[in-house]
Amino acid sequence: MDIPAPDKVSRVDNMAGKVCLITGASGALGKSTALGLARLGASVIMACRDEARGEADRAQVEAASGNSGVKLMPLDLASQQSVRELAARFKAENGRLDVLINNASVFKGTRSVTPEGLETMFATNHLGHFLLTNLLLEELKASPQARVINITAPSTTKLDFDDLQGERKFSALSAFGASKMCNLLFTYELARRLVGSQVTSNALHPGLMKSNLMSEAPAPIRWLTRLFSSTPERASVSLLYLASSAHLARVTGKFFKGIKVSNSSSYSRDEDVQRRLWDVSGELVGLVSSPGT
Image 1 (cartoon, rainbow, N blue to C red):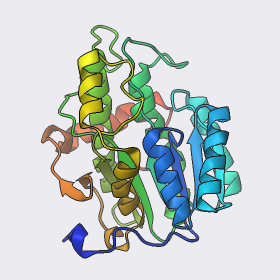
Image 2: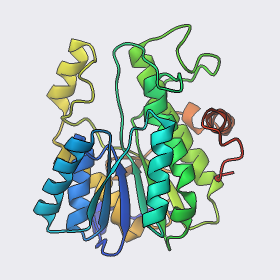
Image 3: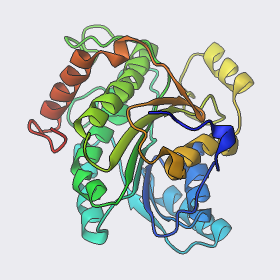
Image 4: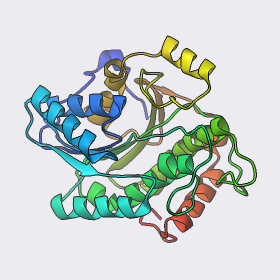
């Protein structure tokens, strides 16, 4: 499918009546995107791990946008129970979901595990979003045209399926890179499984931005990140474009760098690897026959 050149189309469209859910909405990109969507008229659900900070950010977004349809829902993606609780609450309060932005991400300098015993970066950056998306698929399908947007990076890290949790060998940078590869693999597999529906699935690398994400990374990486990073407000432009532009309504299974389609690594496009990760992820969250199948 031909995709209109970004400079020839309206970057964003009105979102009045749309329901949007953003994970990691207290983070730099998440909060900026929440504000942008609220200003476009959307009903915005900010999913945040820290409830007190999340409420403060929600109030700021509401005040700055003049949009009273901004809500907070607590979510800790490292906890499968928390993911299920948010999904249950969302279903009870909303009939449909128009845009799901899987944005939350963590970087841990040392290996740690979740309540389920899973490596934290894998569980938070990939598995929590995998579970959340599957649990909300019916609500996404209830929308006339829904979008799933996974925030990732152009990772080239290959997965070690025999040691996904880094129990035998752990490197923080490799584990983070693997979690970003999982985002890409999940995006493509989800897009293929949703062919024939009105739900699209795309991945976005918004570029480096000023945030606290890499605070536990080695000093040289922190320095380079600060040196070459843009502001969250600038980075959110591409995310708002993917979330709102009518010109992308039928575009799916793509990797965007900013507002332009790019090619991710050949490994990320391997359908056998995509299916394998999906199956393993389904087993780890108890969705062996997941809704996306």
